[in-house]
Image (cartoon, rainbow, N blue to C red):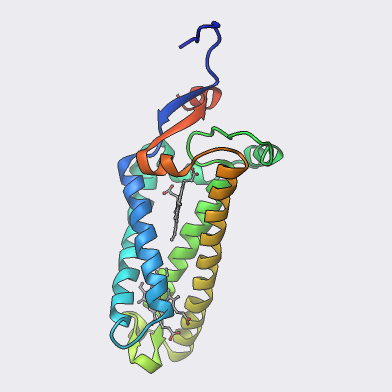
Amino acid sequence: MADLSGREPETVRRKIWDVPTRLFHWALVGTVLTGLYLGEFRSFSTIQLHFYFGYATGGLLVFRLLWGIFGPAHARLGKLFPSPRALISYLRNLFKRRPSGVAGHNPVGALSVLAMLAALSVQVVTGLCSEDDGLFSQGPLVDYLDPATVLKMTAIHHWSSRVVMGLIVLHLAAILFYRLWKREDLVTAMVTGWKTVRRDEDDRQA
Ligand code: HEM
Ligand code: HEM
């Protein structure tokens, strides 16, 4: 609606993140952080719990895949693959000191989400094929694999957990950068679903 000066406001409030996407996100935060902790400080009494949080993470990833196919527009998997043109044009303005106002993930954010989902998938799949000799514990697929493959999977499980940790740090740094440098609050949108978006973005989504 036009303001008193007769101009259309440049931004509008829109419901961007649906309830399942938000629940998925915060549940994922819980299972991943707990899974990382229980993996890092595993013991006889907690390794099984580590497995359960790993399965829960796997379940959430399967849900996100299905939601990416059948869910609403902003949750669609296609949104996680920005075109090179959109990416380059977004990168040109990345350090401008103003909110991006993108409805949904911005092109760089989309790529980082893709990296996070991929790294977590590797983490879950290799976990199923990993063993901890010291704790006499093994993932449910270990019996079907030869020892050399299990050794490799366990090593990848270790190193991909470092990649996951790195991506989480990057994720939080990016959110802080948006808050402090670009003066854009992304977190409230992931909590309430409502986001302030640029009007031209909003028109493009319509
Ligand atoms: C274990 C830690 C975390 C993981 C694995 C994680 C993972 C993800 C994933 C997969 C998405 C994409 C959501 C989707 O489209 O399905 C996302 C988005 C988002 N996350 Fe996280 N997250 C973590 C921690 C956090 C924390 C602690 C915060 C808040 C302080 C946060 C704030 C956000 C926000 C604001 C978005 C939306 C970004 C945008 O507007 O493009 N995340 N996160
Ligand atoms: C699918 C279920 C999962 C199973 C069955 C599983 C299994 C295992 C096993 C057997 C180990 C011990 C490996 C060794 O001795 O080095 C381990 C370690 C570990 N896991 Fe998992 N895992 C699963 C999912 C996950 C997930 C989702 C995460 C993180 C989000 C994770 C993070 C870790 C970490 C950080 C370690 C310690 C790595 C190290 O320092 O060597 N795991 N896991």
